Image (cartoon, rainbow, N blue to C red):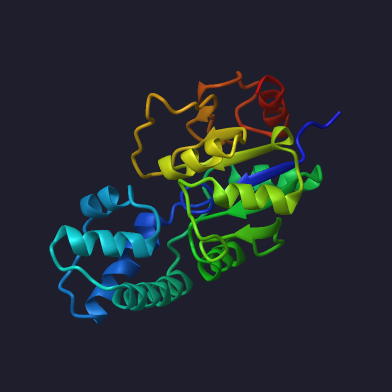
Length: 249
């Protein structure tokens, strides 16, 4: 009997590391276009990642430095940031799949497990990354992006909408997430969730009901380590491991 019917993937930081590689440069290019004299360094951006969503980050930072922007200004800067992000990703080989992602996605596809994207990025940005990383096939039925919901992660709405669209029961699906807002979103939606950290440092809050945490998905040459959750029977997270996790959820 197959317990697993669907997998909801976060995109940025879960399927591929993109924040420092592409989003950060795009923000700074946009700031330069508007002569803002802002330049987010790595440390500043890591701190701002606690604020989910690009427009929210711009607005928050403007208030932080006492240069409050109105909604129109924030929207214009963010639109310019999206323009730079798309061009930067297209022209530079800066985004690649994380360890074990392609292997697991192919296995899930072969076993006819349905797969979806739930992201805080825009639909345009998400499609760009997917088209670049999955040239041979697109394994994802649909994308829930920041364009599709009024409330973003850590609100559970993105995952609740994805669940409704897929029609899959919560106990027959799994979420892969890499960030605190993402984890809060999926856990609030009562979905079985596996935390796979990105290259962005994150501190798991003590009251977060997280029951599966691996350092990577792993592959034959790079063993995954389980920090919390069922024991691995091989070097990597595979479909059998996901079903094993669902059985104890």
